[in-house]
Image (tube, rainbow, N blue to C red; front, side, top):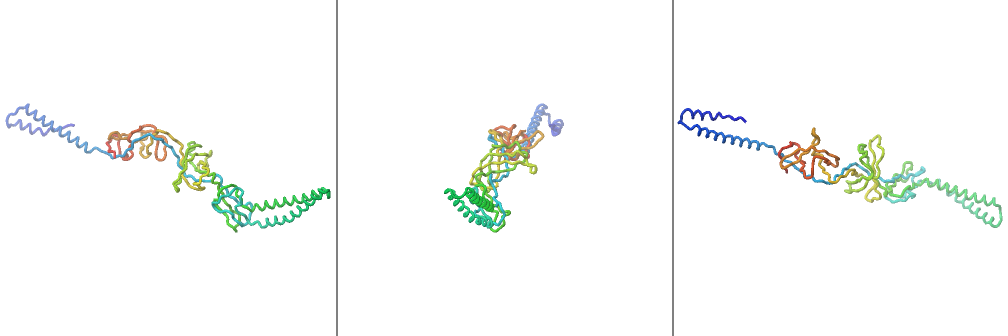
Length: 361
C-alpha cells in the first residue's frame, strides 16, 4: 500500500530554516520512529476494520452417523376380500323373505333369502298324491310278484310310473330352488342389496370371506422392476393408528394401458382387525443397506459441478460435492463425498459461501 509522507515536509522546512542547529542523524532517527508508529497504527486500524466487517452466519448442523437406510415406495391402498361374491336369485320374482343380516356369519350353500315361489310349490304339492299312489301300486305289485302272481311287465310298469313321478318331483324342486338366494362361499354378510316385496331383478346379498383378505395398490410404470414378490411392506391405517407388517405376494405382469399403472398385492389371511374396503397406506421396502449415510434432500444444492452440501470444520463452512443414491421419505443415501462424523449444515446454508465463518447454534 502506498503511503503519503507530505506531513513530514513542514517539519523538514522548519528544521532547515532556523530554530537552531540539530543533529541530522538524530532528526532522521526521530522521524523514522514517528513513521513506524504511524505504520503500526494504520495496520491496527485496517485489521480492526476487516475483523468488524467479516460475515459470520448462524447455522445448525447434525453430525452424520451410519445407519440402516430403507428405500420405500409409498402408495394409497385398500383392503379387499380374496373371496367377495354377490349372491343372486337364479330366477325372477318378488323377494318374500330375507333370513340374514349384515355382519352375520354364513356357510357355503346356506339360503340367505327366498322369492315368492307359490306356483313352483303348488306343482310340487300336486305331485305328492300321485307319488304316494304310484308308490303303493308298485309295492303291491312287488308283493304279488313275490307270490308268483301277476306278470313281470306289470311289475316293471308300476316301478317305471313311480320312478318317473319321483324324477318330476326332483325337477320341480330344482326349479323351486332357483327362487332361493344361496351363499356360494362361507363368510360374513357384508351388504344386503334387496328388500322384501321388491323385484329380485337387481337384488343381491354380498358375502365376504374374511379369512382371505388382501391389500391392493396400483403403482406407476416407472416402478416396474423396482418391486418384486417378497419385498417387505408395512400397511398403516391412519384412522385406527394401527399397522401391519407383511410382504408383497403378487406383482402384476402387465401395465394397464389407460392408467399406465400395475397392481401389487399383499395377502393378509384372517385378521380380525381388518375389514374389506378399509383404506390404508402401503409402504414397500424395496431397498435396504446397513451402515449407510443418509441426509435430508432439502439441504442439497444443485451446482455446475454437481450436487453440493456444506459441512463445518472448526468455525468455517466448506462446500462438498457429493454423489447420491436412493431417495426415501425425504432422505437420500450419500454414496460419495461425506464421511461419518462430518458436521452437515442443515439450516442457514442458503446464503453461505465456502470458507465463510459460521456460528453453530
